[in-house]
Image (tube, rainbow, N blue to C red; front, side):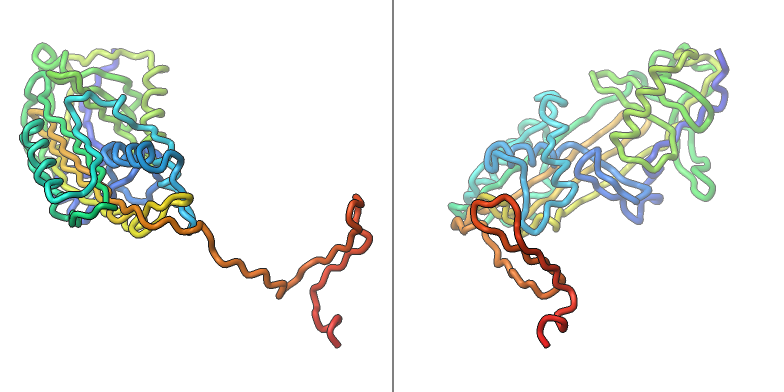
Length: 338
């Protein structure tokens, strides 16, 4: 086996809290395109969107003003409750009443011992025509063994970060904690960090600025063709930066939009993500919510202006006949109105 001496594992996200002071873009789906170098996705908002579609719209969501690409991606429901265990999420769809906030607060405290970061940001004024769709995704797990703290060292060319990992000669202690997926070179490799639960932490070093779904598929493809050793060796080293983030995303593009063919108007849509990873394990808490209104059903109609005020064509045809007997293309109107 090639010695993986000096294996320096870095993530596609930023290394520590100082690095992502400028913010991280929260994406609605794994398929979402972004020019942001630092970006994050979690499936919580998709869970809310799935219930919105299934319980209210019953069809793909479309807007008369135009349906954004990310809404088209959400409509595909590529992530669902089938992709996560029941113990890891809580969700509810309910009419907004004076007890809605109290009910959810009690439920997430009972299930996760957690409080909400977004309920106070929502307008939960009770109304008969107002509904709330809410979800929380919660993960809290430890690595199989607690990794070593490696202190501070360089990240990229101009930054530093606090790291954890495995030093040379630690196979006996950590060999089963790290699974090698592939190692093509020092800038193209992937591993799995094992945990005390069913959760697995995949780490893929790759600088390609591609969508998450592309990178995930690319990683699995490289794993399938890799014919080198997948054993973490005694001379191998692992170095992973601590990660700590909290991001909030308000989907302003959805606010005030009426879903075509329905009387449903989206009022608010918001998602939060809190993620921590260190030598002990991972903590993830994410919330998402939408408030919607059922308005008086108006005709799905807009004014259309049939103005032939630029180049156009005229055809004359007898009723019941196959072909026209006259055709005229009008471009220079002065030729026809002198």
